[in-house]
Length: 269
View 1 (tube, rainbow, N blue to C red):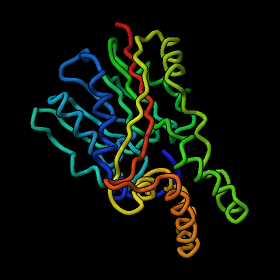
View 2 (view 1 turned 30 degrees about the vertical axis):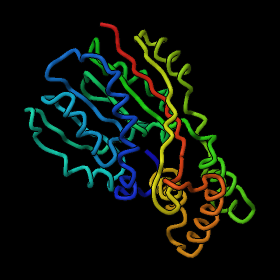
View 3 (view 1 turned 180 degrees about the vertical axis):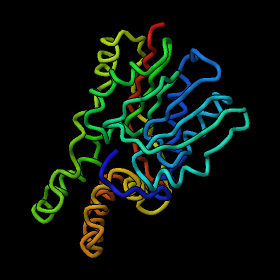
View 4 (view 1 turned 90 degrees about the horizontal axis):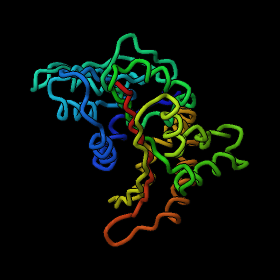
């Protein structure tokens, strides 16, 4: 999805909080047109949420797609037959160019399309690949103006870092608001359910917001600085200090509000 080196273990440190929006998304997906269903998980990451699809549709044929070799390698532990008689497989694919070569009853994407600037342009192609009555369901972060991201963007553009990192913390204007996804899917003659939720997450441990962003927003920056560990550590220390002021630790942990945007579009039969 993005030219960054991904770390599945770091990403999964907050797996519970990261998975909650996926469960909320699944709860709004209607009955699929075929049984067994054919499902694609676009931007499957380390495969932990792909496995959840098999809990909802036990005999489905599920394909997880991701552009990161590290994520696909981690996902292999979930590959193979499922207890309900279905199957899970994983394949490399980049959502920026993925054109399905078969039809699906469900295409789902969880916290991945924020890395794909042209994803609104790709959505008509994915809708075309749905069987009549099939569904495209997506969830993306909507917190790019929150301190965690705003401070990161400002730091990347600071004089000390501008030459190496200018623009690395920005560039999420392609994320639509819920109304934007509703309007887009409506033009494609779909029945649409679009909404947003802000989860106020209580994160444990020392510098937990920094550890959270090391799994996601910081990945492109860590990749850009991976050949210069001293410079990388200096940047992280500066960002850490900014986060400590923006997200003070309380007696039970650090409160980290996180806005998410959802859309479920069902193709008319």
